[in-house]
Structure formats: structure tokens, C-alpha cells
Amino acid sequence: MILTAHNSRFCAAGIFMLLLFTAAPAQIVSTLLTGGRLNRPDGFALDADGNLFVANWGGGAGTTILRTTPAGVVTLFDSTSDAPDGLAFDSAGNLFVSNYKTGRIDKITPRRMKTVFAVGLNQPSALAFDAAGDLYVSNFGGGNVSRISHNGIIESFASGFDAPLGLVFDPEGNLYVSNYRSGVINKVAPDGAVTEFATVPNPSSSRLQYLVRGKSGSLYLPSYGHNKIYKIGPSGAVSVFSGTGVAGGADGPTVSAQFDGPNSIALTKSGDLIISEYNTNRIRKITGAEPPDSAVRKIKKR
View 1: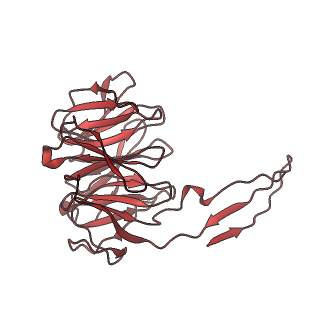
View 2: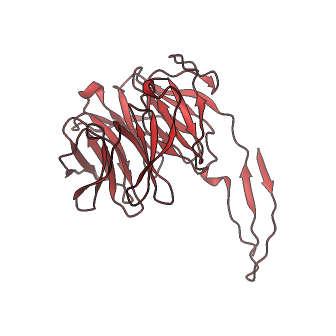
View 3: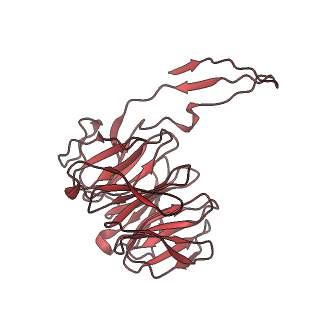
């Protein structure tokens, strides 16, 4: 059902603004994929067409990256990585891959031409691009975040983390970092200054994973140790978004659904969360976590 709210505001150019709001769908957990070619699925990336790319970490011995269409068709995209972990697309559609075991970042063009982009990192995990196109890498083994320029020059951007994993930027250029061991989410200013943004309950057992940020300003991240998906509001308030905490595969409403070793997470244009389960080789979906991109439109009156 579509709900419309009319708010008339006329400017000198005679432009009338109409905001259309889409009613939020029920937040339901379902299972998208299970077994098959999935082998300890880890990092995610969505391309401009909504195709989901999945890194098969394989317990440190994985070599493949899968491509899954919105219709659920799975194909092999790459089979030459070495424990692929983090994935991220740049603005030109190139896919960047962190190789956890070898400390290497690869670049794969839309035509599947693969080259080495950077080397010498320490168990590189999540990847994220800033507005300028520089690539940021969480060094799980080094306790720091590296910044890599367009031409592959590496520098340390921020340090002092405890097994950093998830990375995500906000529109102001602040970088959020999840810490696997401490259960803390840090906020890093554009100048590299690090502050504590939030801490999940029972942090030492949380084993925090990847991060995404919604247009609402909220962060979402799986807790591998708690079998839950946490939501962190713009002010840093932490709540359980989904998962009972009991390991399992029950689908259904977010309050009663179960997860088993959730790790990576992605947010689609329609506002759904996609979550990988490392323990069970499953891909799960939570509908309606955020408003869809089309929820608010601006229309000019002619």
C-alpha cells in the first residue's frame, strides 16, 4: 500500500514538492540460499544492478567468489583468490578483494581482468571506499586501518583497534569500525581521530563482524558470538534488531528468528538486509530494515 503525504511549498520558480512515502513492509527473516556452492561465505558486495557477490572464505582455504542475481541464480565469478574476505566495488564497477592469508588486495574489472592492487597488509578483512575514491582496509592482524590511494600507495590511517573487522562511512566522511574481540564500535573522524561510538552487551563474547549503514543513520552488524543482528542508532544506542541468541535456522519475524554464526551483511536498494552464516553455509534476508531508495521522491509541478 502506498501512503502519500502532501506538503505544499512554493518557491519563486513555482516548484511544488510532493513527498511520497512507501509503507514499510513487515520485517521478516527468510532463507535465500543454502549449501550448494557456498563454502564458509564471508564478505559481501552489491553491484549497481543488485547482484550480490559472495566471498567463499572456506575456513582459510577458499578460493572462489560467487555472483548471485536478484532472482537467485548463482554463478562462479572468480576462482583464483586466496581466502577471500572483504569485497567492495569502486565507482567504475571494479571489484576489490582482500586476500586474508596473503595480505594482498586484488582488483577485478567488469571484464574479469584481475590484477594485484596492493600487497603487504596484515590479514586484510573489510574494504570500504571514501567519497574521494581511496580504499580503506581493516587489518585484522595488525590492529589498524590502512588507506590505499588510487595508485596503490598504502599508509596507516588509524590504529589502536582490537582485531578490527567491519568498515562503513557516513555522509560526513566518518569511518565506523567494528572490533571483533572487544565488542566496541569506534568512530574515526576524517583526520584519523578515534573515539568510542558504541559497545554491544556482553562485548567480550560478541565477536562482531561486518557493518552497514542505512539512510536512517543506523548501523547494522552481526554478532557471530551472540547469533544476533544488532542495530545502533545515530546516537550510539544499541538494540537487538533480530535473533533470539539461540543458534538455529528458524525463519519468521525478527523477534523469533534464529541465526547460526552470522558474519557478513549487505543492504539492498529496497531496504532489505542480506546476511551470511559462516557456520551453516546459508544466506538470509531481513525485509524492510530500512526505507527503500524510492521511498521519498521529489516531483516538479509543471
